[in-house]
Image (cartoon, rainbow, N blue to C red; front, side, top):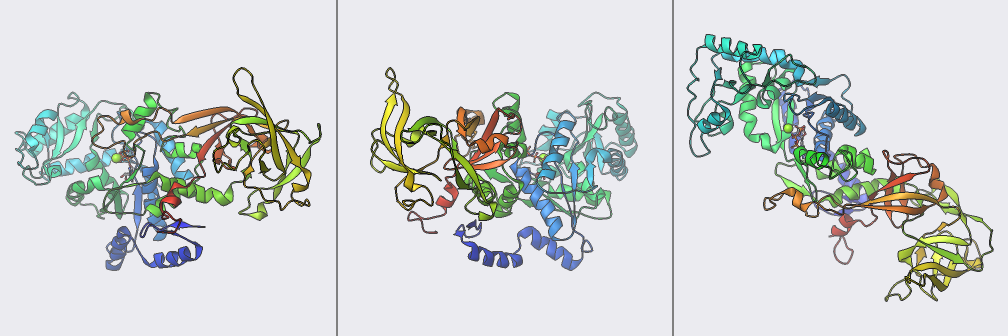
Length: 586
Ligand code: ATP
Ligand code: MG
């Protein structure tokens, strides 16, 4: 077995990998070193408490999986805790459907928040009281400028902002207005509460940021109780503080918000001061990851819902057939860094192949069938031949597969006028049928009108069966097959990337939708599968020999009407990438 090392980018064998793992016990990432230092200096009395804070405005994606693995993983490593907190401060875009899907996804990934399921909306009253406190301290004021005016007054990176004409309202007036904002006396957008910090700060986030806005929207938890809602930059640090979070891990775009995070906490003065730590978000080639863009694909019908097997959502990956282990392994291998980069999607595919190599039973499935008739095999005879379930794991045993005079093989495995080095079947040539006999092609029967091949006629050599006198005979090609009279039919769905371009979000692209791959789904309706698969359970995974790993679709598949999704083909472009041109490890 091989493994990818994100540090020196090599594929390693088992022994080397084990040595690396031992070394890795000592090597720590930058987040762990911050925590180690905090533990040494006893800032949090040795406590480690993290949180995963999704906004319930969409389904989680593989980028969120990185954050989940990181936050829950850190808590596990340090014997600490990790909360699940819904950051539900924007009722216009949020919904309980998303809350439920997020819980299902985190649980499926293998993490447990126990009874620590929290909502920023649970803190609305407390956040309001903190705002009153800031007003009383002269650190917040009600501002009547419009959103456009606030933007104009803010200044730019090179020019300082201007003070709002409302900045010097008295504490009494501010308290009165803020209370009336809450009471619903003013229209949406007419007033905001702002922090009074510094309109000349070099950091734009510190130029009197908005803390509260008026918004009449029904919240999925608090209903119409509130018509003012706190902004993220205000609600987030205080939610962290209320929950006793020690390390508030977030993505890099919040680095510039850290001074405001600290300002809010210091001025409200709660007992613990959580530390915000930023890491680079995950980007994947051929993938868009923003919820806004994923929602567009769903709402405009380019995909079949958030769990479409082509989506980078956790529910899409699950339906496609990815395992939680493979996603956790992926998140582990990409590691955490301080600067943004894009990970090759081939690494994710490599992880699921590695996981399923030993787990998934191997079966034969003919996706594009053509009939093959063995002329010297008795009509009506059926033999049950033995096939290994998984050669990687002999303990998984064997099964019996029916063999008869009429079989199906892949249309592509026959060529009437073969090119050089074509080792599959062609007139006069021999191949082995996997787990069965060597056959020789004699002639073909074609549709006279179209020239399409209808049947391939062969003879077989009875001595070439496993255990037979000529079982050791060597031929260049081995083909998979199924017995025509015993095969079951199924639909098989093959997937390409949703986006043709490696970087669909690149700045040159006017619109990411231009890069959408119109042929990302291919449906094959009359595939022929081993009879063993008739009872395949939804969600179960198999290797179809020579075709890749497949999973029974959990939405569309029904007994008698099976639908399989291809998770990934067998061609490991990642492992290949990591090897030099001569197949040597780079
Ligand atoms: P999007 O940009 O897709 O809308 P978001 O950041 O608004 O995502 P949240 O629900 O706020 O989504 O994210 C919850 C947590 O997941 C946050 O801590 C966020 O930093 C983290 N996260 C989101 N996207 C990624 C990513 N691509 N890689 C790593 N972490 C991410
Ligand atoms: Mg966010």
